[in-house]
Amino acid sequence: MKIIEADFIYTPKGFIKSKAIAFTTQIEEIDTVETLKEKYPDAQTIQTKPNSVLYPGFINTHVHLEFSANKTSLKYGSFMPWLDSVIEHREDLVGACNNAIMQEQCNAMIRSGITTFGAISSFGNELEVCERTPQRVVFFNELIGSNAQYADMLYGDFTERVNASMSCEESSRITPAIAIHSPYSVHPIILQRAVNLAKQHTLPLSAHFLESQAEKEWLEYGEGELKGFFKKYFNTTTPVTTIPEFLHAFDSYPTHFTHAVQIETRGLEILAAKNHSIAHCPRSNRYLGCGRLPLEKLHDLGINYSVATDGLSSNDSLNIFDELRASLMLHQEIPIDILANKLIESVTSNAADILGLNIGRIEKEKSADFAVLTLPETPKREEEIALWTILHTKEVSSVLVDGEEIL
Image (cartoon, rainbow, N blue to C red; front, side, top):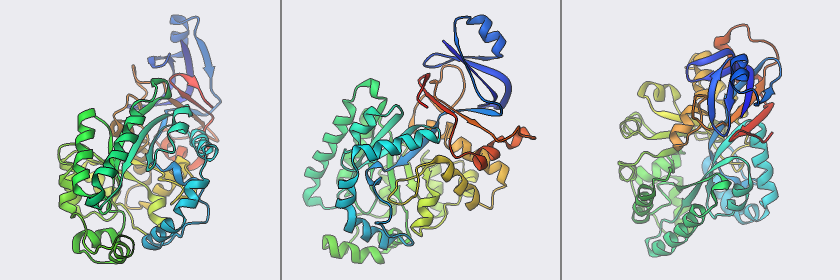
């Protein structure tokens, strides 16, 4: 048994003062430190620094580790030039991204308090690193392939990777999952098979969706910049699906759609009705010129969302506070104090619900995953702690996963 105390603790009921947490691998009790020490006299006590805030460990639902070697290889500013640069430099970047580079990015996420992340894996190269990292990892095996001629081969490779992640030892903290690359790159035949596989094993399911204007024009009209791309690389000028057909494939299984920047109000209403959610990656969207996800509409419709970093193919860091600050600056329509609290929810309880994990909240019987940060001074108004957290934090003071300190 251990006891940790902090000046402020973030709970589902808000920030509480003068309390402590007794925990093993899970949270056992929340009370005053005196009461807990009396009840558990042999417990190890962890004392945090002055002006500390104790949060559940932060959750980054969407990251691509396999492009962690990118610094200046890929072209930013617009989606299609970026995509062309990915095709041009993909082999070199993936080849240069060894386990040491990927582990350093896992460590960087730990330093910003990320105790759980969703790893989107195209090839399975990250699995060894994800088994070794002390964080929890939802390992999203990504399906890609729009050519029906190779459907069985592509699906066979995909299921091999799914099986490999399902066979990981429990000690690795890996949860196997499935990701669909995008509507324009996955044939409906294998898409439906993958969704059925997720249903069969109750696996988390994710899909890139309507990231760019080019994607929207291609899916709606078979025109635009992606038309030339598919003609050049795949000798086709016809999209394999439409937006309604793609969404229909997920009707009976809640899915975490990534980006959704170009989705219209009717599409958002469908997501709300089907209990889907969205991974919001504001810096990636800005760097690739994709536009802004209207968070105010998500709030109005009750759509659950997470804030996520995406990968270093379209970002400059995997620091969750960098992402939260970008979100804070981007969404001017929402009052800043309200938005700050919503953003903290997006990387704690919201993200936990989306991934289906017993984390993300400081309450009894939740896993003892914590991130402790230190504010530069005592907050004058407790209702603004979320805002000061986002504005003043670059790295946290300590991190625990399953009750064990990893930072």
